[in-house]
Image 1 (tube, helix red, strand yellow):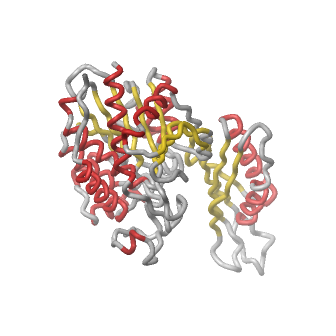
Image 2 (cartoon, helix red, strand yellow; image 1 turned 90 degrees about the vertical axis):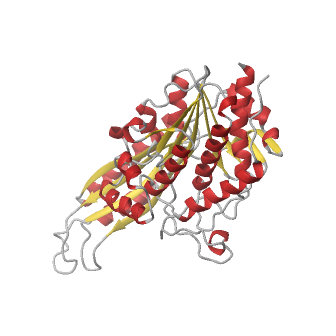
Image 3 (tube, rainbow, N blue to C red; image 1 turned 120 degrees about the horizontal axis):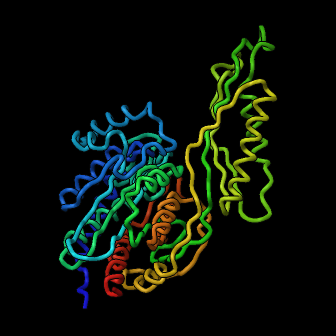
Length: 431
């Protein structure tokens, strides 16, 4: 009979809250998580995990959506916040950390994934906003943990504690992946192609919230959307708008034409399709014809074919708009997500341990309706013969994801940790 994994739940719940609030206070956007990675790595090292950085877990030649010019500045900010210089050096400019706990006994390889990046949104400064009222709101203007990744990282650290404390009861190897750059779907493909997941027998990932109430576990979310993130750089020619407007080539006009036409792309009859233009920047002055414009957007589709349909429309519209206004356009891929399908065997395991993990409602399926960087990770594990699952840990929210008033029910992090530990227990019993 397999012995149960045990720990002081009340003490761990408090530490989870402490971890989450510290990370919440120091948010970092995608590929900038130097402080976050360092803090996580320090905890893991103290627990006896072997650590992996940079090219060991990320195929750097397939990285998307990373601003190389900002890296030195972000590293310096992390150092100003008290980051360990030695850990910064180990990262070699690439954030995220993988951790391995080898029990020294025969058994499967488990992988648990936790994303760690924040969102580029301004956090609310209202006294009614709990992080502000309690003094752990963002110290980085324009960047905030408004999606719950701070809670994910905290749950990963909590799981690491539980595993290290119970290592004598465990078999096999357990890997914990603290993933950078999930927002914008920028790192999943690069991590998958590094090969670090190729020996995984079981893979588990989760998201907190997602319009699922506190106490509810969704074991098998449905309808993950494929997605392509893109930047369009329009390059024209400046000119004085009054003296010689005929000489200029208006990049802003080309970008605006693109926006109106892209938002009018017909939705596809065969399934869900989406397009959004989230940002457009251009111009130097009211009397100068804009020579440059940058448009940032995304497409989504229920499957790869539908997303490809939307993205091809975007490319055609961008080229046609540039031609109409006599400018050039450069299309830069910034991120990519594919669909995700859970293994029924893993869904059954979650369903069987949900109530014992502290959930009051266990739901087998619910629509997800968004995109997730974990798709590439799940696909890689499954292609190598492993089993994978992505689930939703319910939490009442004060506002929707990516909203400055976003906050979670911190008590639900404990159920997440118990769920992950229970998955290992269940698999060990079955073997």
